Length: 289
Image (cartoon, rainbow, N blue to C red; front, side):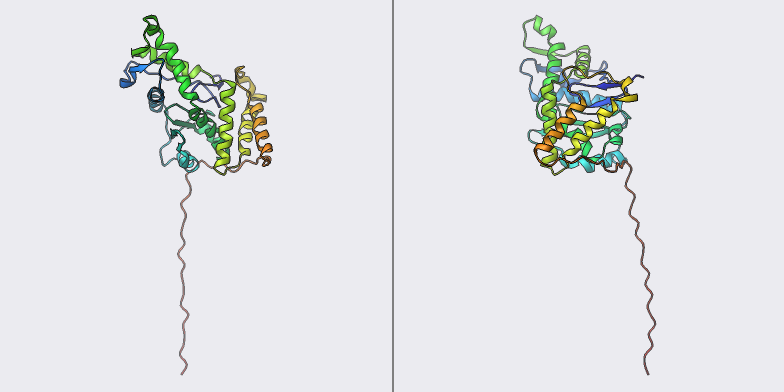
C-alpha cells in the first residue's frame, strides 16, 4: 500500500505511515460520551472524553507492546518520569507497527509507534514526544476535536437552533473520527509545539540539539527513494527541513548548538546481569615448632 506522510489533527502532526489509521466506532454506542455534550461550550472534559473513546478503540485494534517488551521497557525508561505537567496528565503505550509515527490526544494519551523507536535515539524520541505533548498542553488537541465535533455533530442541532446536542449517533462519531484524522494544525500551532518540545528538552536537562536531528531524519525520509511515497506537506505546515533549521537557530541563540551525533538505539529487553561466584582458597599454614 502506498505510504503517506500524515499530518493529522490530534493524531501525529509528526510522522510517516504506510496508511492513515482509522477510528472505527462501529455500531456500539459509546455511552456517556454520547450524551449531554455541549457544542459551543465544549470543555476540556468533553474533549478528553471523546478523545479517550477514540483512543480506547484504537488500542483495541492495534498490537500494544506489553510491559515486558523491549519497546515498552525503553519508552518507560525514557518517558515514564514525564507523565505529568502543568495542566495535563499523560498515559503512554507503544503500538507495534513499523510506521514512523507518534500522537497525543486531548485526554493525554500518548501513543508511540515502534517504527519511530527504531530510527530515533532516546533524545530524538523525547523531542518528538515533546512536540506531541505541546499540542496537548497548548490545547491544540482540544480545539481540533472541538472543531470536528461542531462540524459533524452539530449539523442537526444548528438546524434546530440548539446549542446542545442531546446525543451523538454512531454515524456522527465515525465522521468525527475521520475529521480528527484529516484535520491539520496551523503553522503557528506547529511552531508553538516545536518550541514547547525545545523547552521541554532544555528544562529537563536533555540535549536540545536532538530536536534538529529528529527533523533532519524526517526531512531525509522525504528525499531520494523515499520521496515517491510521501505526499507534499499541506501548505499550512512548515516542512521538516525548515523546522530543523528553526530548532538549530534556537540552540544557536542559546549558545549551545553542536551538531548532534545519534546515540545507540536499543529496543531489546536488557540482558540480565550475571553474577560470578568468587572461589577463595585458604592457604595452608604450618605452625612453627
